[in-house]
Amino acid sequence: MSKYKPRLVKHPVKVTRGDSKKIVYRAIRNIQQIKNKQAVGTTRINRQCLMVRQEGIYWVVV
Image (tube, rainbow, N blue to C red):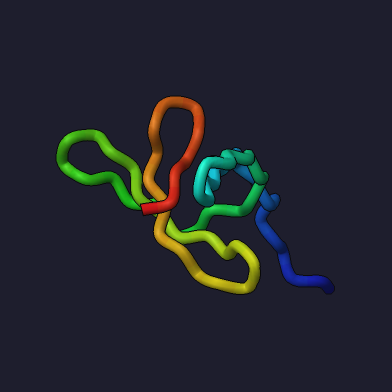
């Protein structure tokens, strides 16, 4: 019997470097709700673990 794996949901993350903005789709883990209804989680971008927060329909790197 194989172990059950939850479906991987990828969310759009807006990455800003200098004056260029690009949207990458990444799996966001450890999502927590802060008291002002702000969602914060972690994601891996270029092998680095980064904190992201939800802003509208995108997630942005903190």
